[in-house]
Image 1 (tube, helix red, strand yellow):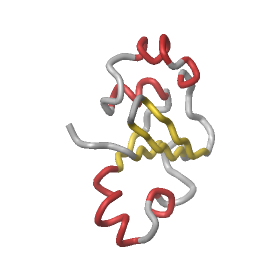
Image 2 (tube, rainbow, N blue to C red):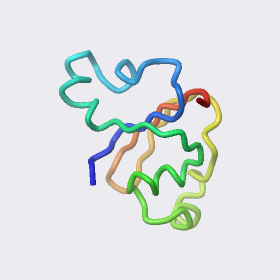
Image 3 (cartoon, rainbow, N blue to C red):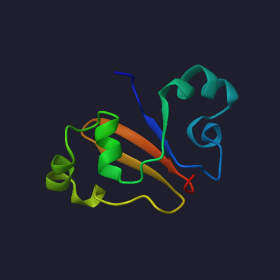
Length: 93
């Protein structure tokens, strides 16, 4: 499975390169390959789809704060265990 740290939901207001990388070179050499795109809006489903957790019920049981729908522009930093995930949320496509 591919190593994912950055997730882009929908069409963001700012480019992922601006949000996830310190400069263009950092984006091309490092962050671009760790960035995935989705249209899914339900956060637990996103975390399951990209392999951060095994099931939605696991999120409901252990992290009820993450049971939400991403329906507004925002930039989230989530810590699951030892992993950090950054999520850039944009408008619906």
